[in-house]
Length: 350
Length: 81
Ligand code: SF4
Image 1 (cartoon, chains in turn orange, red):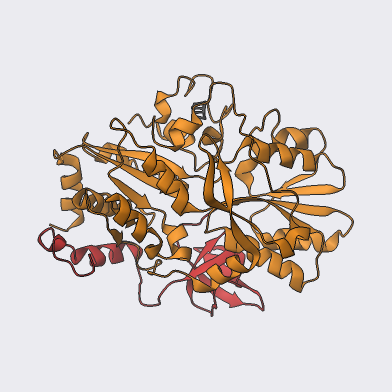
Image 2 (cartoon, helix red, strand yellow):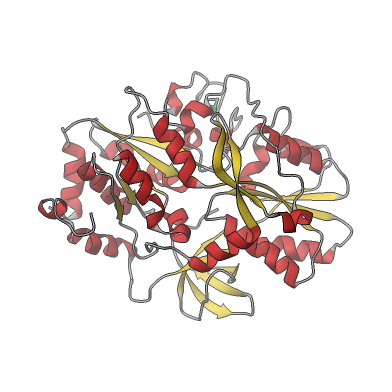
């Protein structure tokens, strides 16, 4: 019972108890949409997106602070793409850019280092959002900045970590919105190791399957999760990349620069121990990340309910009507990892 | 931010490497993993975050090798559960 065709047949014809599975990672959300996976599953298997799209979970206070920093003519704000169009309480970074602010998009930390090295009169502030996969990258960026003696690079951080937000999501399940399994985030596990979810699985009796990102890998992981329903175990189906303990060098690098903090999540509030902030000895590299908690997203956006799996994007009254990728109301429609964006572009309905 | 498939290291520099993704070449920092020419690596946000074990040629092939050990019957008694 293990050829790919048999797995597909099983998932298509499954008529056992209803299962709701959460994919935590935004890259999984995007791959599920582009591979048309929901249409390959029986009605009794539902996939919901979780809080693993870094841009989507960012609160408005963080965007507002970036906009404020951008409006200072001595600063350049540098970001990885997606964040530019997310609105804070009033403006987005794109709006600030249109008003003359220096906001740039990059693909790698080396670019910001080169820019800053060539132009010592400006401060280059990196909009450092992300999870455990990306935090070591920012740590490496700072280490490279120290090594190359570049003092005009700072971070505005909104870094999040997985374990506590997953506990929060598990704790906010209802009878109508259960979660029977987690497609564990493959690249967070590449850094932190598959063992990171063992305790949560055991204490909640919910299975976690670490999954790769290709369509067949995701289907195989869904198959596993259905089979493991009710068992508090972690299964690693991405062993080419993920080991039990992860990338220890990256963990050490992260630990050298960052310490755990309480972090604010869009629609979920402040969750104890769910984020990372620069350690006190590196405070000169921090552009003001502490205390950015206000989450004032208004205009009827239901991102908060979407991020916790309480509703699917089509359950938002604005979806596809006033809210589209061209004119997004919420971060979930802006980001290419966002579930609203992915439901919209793939025409997904369930 | 995440390139979900691996690339191949074609040149190693002091603190970075050139990684080839089927023709598209990117420079990635190497401070989080030790890399050598020919390594297959996962790149995230401009950094190598993982070097893949050499013998694994094809991810998709591999998943079924992994799954082959998972028959429904031995789900119950698999060691380490
Ligand atoms: S469809 Fe738009 S308004 Fe509705 S939850 Fe998604 S991003 Fe927010």
